[in-house]
Image 1 (cartoon, one colour):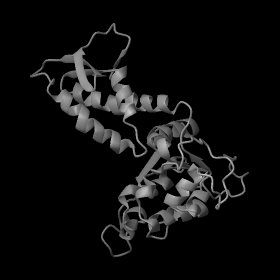
Image 2 (cartoon, one colour):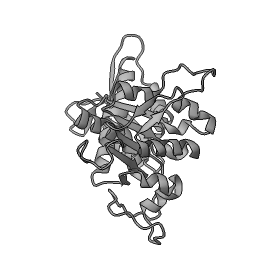
Image 3 (tube, helix red, strand yellow):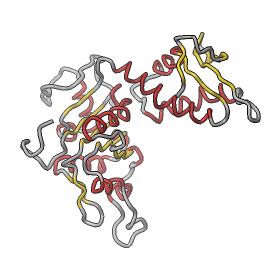
Image 4 (cartoon, one colour):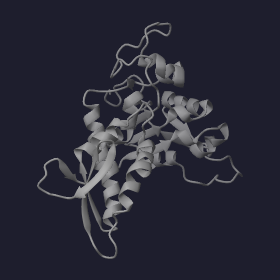
Length: 285
């Protein structure tokens, strides 16, 4: 990123980062880390799920309804940009939105602002825009941060061409960096699973008297379920469908408290009474 006022187009976002393939699943973790590093707090993230904008009419959910229509006075996520301009704007699931709405985001990246239904502008010039999309590379070769972009007529397969096929070459061209995967991405993903997803699950069960601790084998099993379509919703759905049903039966009655370690062995989720001295077992906190 270039220092503000020294770059060629200061009205544009500080950076527009496109995460695809395996990197897309790290959008939430990366957004928080960038916000903390750049702006001093992991809470300085504004998240918009573009996957819910599947028709042109859904543009009102992004920019507001026209005067006289229901929702005209509603507060929108983009209005938070005025309240918190120094932030990470996370645009999730861009592959799933209607092309017309994707074009609105492309124009905002180009101009440096959204214009809502009131005619007011929400500026991106002080923000970092983080975009996630489910795009699998044409080849399995991991490219990481894209350097020189291949020519539009290049015959060599790559993540730029794959992203362009899904999102459009014009949109991809407005992104400063296209990121598919990185060294250490597996470790970062496991850390997110343990510190966010499983920690939240532990907190819910703790309120019911069940202390949960996660064996490394369980975290590894979750990480192994990764696909090119693994975002936060997919992980949550997997936990609800596979993990939660295996734990509910252990909820203690009344005011009792029980402590379990959860592991994955021989294709099955298993539990044992928690033994604190086991170094392979970790708190669910």
